[in-house]
Length: 398
Image 1 (tube, rainbow, N blue to C red):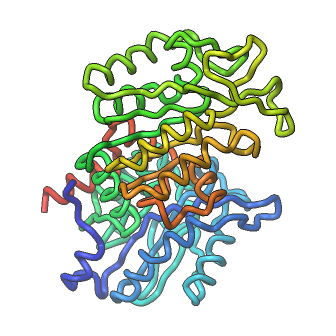
Image 2: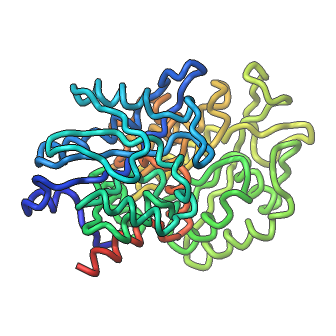
């Protein structure tokens, strides 16, 4: 995908003295007192801001925070805690500006944070008049917010239509590169792990990947539905019997291409869904009527680990068992460590996947960790994200 990038503009000397508007993703969790509890997204946004400042730009940054009511400011919707944390990371004060739509006064080398963009009327529905007003604030628009790239809103799409120049920041550009490497031009074999509680929430992803991948590993409740589709009993396990035909269609689509959906040969079961429930490992053919399948068994994990170690590219979305409970975490840990040990290029995304990566300390051994939840899933579905589409269109216009 051909897009304009901020580092290209800097290399061409086109940023010094310019007004740069950065759409970042600073939507961080906070406690009841408004204190930030996890600042990964803020830290991930710092390189783009520093690049623009060091290039001599006047820098405006904005983001959404939560789901405020447009035009109705409440203190809990404010980016004030974000401004403070951003200032600490940049080593300078970052003023917070409210009511910024009609103009922002700042000089080259200065940076300001513009209050929660979702407070502006028309942001969510990408109002054209609002987009044009925002575009008039800047010479260069930079989208560095992959987490919102699947939404066509005022600050993610509309402003990119009307700004004199529209480009991708380093974070968004890295996502585009990693996704292209994993899905558009993958080194084979391409193996995808798609796990979660329900087939219904990831059916379109499974269908899309079934035409691309060489191996499709399913886990969690999704695997239970595929086990049912393969004629196995799953006891009281979470599954969606009404989607058996869809699961079989995915299996057949893979088989027609000489690819496969490995069905577990052994599983770890319990009689109750609880952290202290006794765990029993048994053959996939021996699941009792009152069993709950909460993890893949060690034989299955070893077979899947071998496939991952032999892969050329790995796409990972979702743990394969209830990894929050230690007795049912071995499958996810085995696959996580196999991904870490594999020479394959790996890309991982989704909240639970990131939690598993952190739990097993393999951050440095995964090729690329995606910062977007919904955006990452929509890419796996084969959709073109609105933010990607408008940046590519603007690049094509020159």
